[in-house]
Image (cartoon, rainbow, N blue to C red; front, side, top):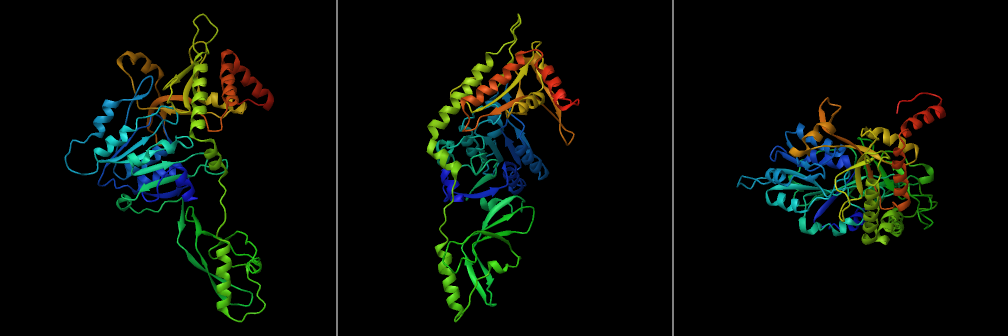
Length: 460
């Protein structure tokens, strides 16, 4: 699977190590827990939205003494404030000392804004270790990323619904081999790793202890639980038939059905030799990766073109929705890039009623759930307002209290993201749902409808 995924992402085993993690957040936290912030004390991130994974990294880094900085984004298109970011990156010192860790997503998972890859080169030239967040990339996008040109120190990928069945979201952390020696050893829960070959003792029915060599054993270390081993022993072993896969604990005693039925034994070496021969026959088994195979069969051009057509149609259609009053108040306000050739398949927006008041994103999500439409909500932050937007700044920015009692200033928004299997029917259904808010009584009707169906009052 490791080789299959690295080939899919067009990453060379000669340059990078690959680590399986439980999810995207685990990958970010693993880097923060291992990076030497005692020597390189800065952490610089480029995110226009609140991210659970990035917040976990920031929290862990601050505990280890890191100075955390963030890029800012210009209102209303949320472009990077290039001058400010360059000042934070460019080093004034002439000593060849690492400045810290620079974390750059290739594009925003919330607004769909793409960021120039040139920032990777600028950071590397000024002594930063670079972590590239490729989680927002679509399937096959890694083929055109140009990884060999930039060679970041860390790369995190988590293609939701592509690696395995739905739901699947395990993360892949790639670490450049030249920086692996600078990291601090730290055991982290939720890591999936491959261990070296081991010898396993199998006791047959007449009490002979036989050593069987396992050439690849997969272990799962989750929250310090007892490891489990993937073995291929069965009572069909002696018959020369394909052995079935069994999961047994490291200390679990083999049941009678798992032992070898041997009636006459002349030489223990014959048993060992026969066992190894049969084991070699069953080593070559096929791993089926249906989602990756489907992505490969579609190809990068078809996938990217369709995603671009769909998201730009949706953006254009949303902007045409206006309330039927004399002022013609727009129903939807989109944050970030509008219709663009190179925008990502994600969008952040808010819905406003005919009075110009915002409908809370949490309410929009709950109403969408009733229509079997999957949307989410998030918080846009680190926004910079020019003087001409001064009045707008005070009106739209709100405080969001965090669990640690800190306040974060930003804009709560509704977010949607298109998967590589999304089609026109999906986005048209979403557009029809948003258009229902043109009815001034839509929210109130839904409240009474929900109450009538459930026979109780529920706050929405």
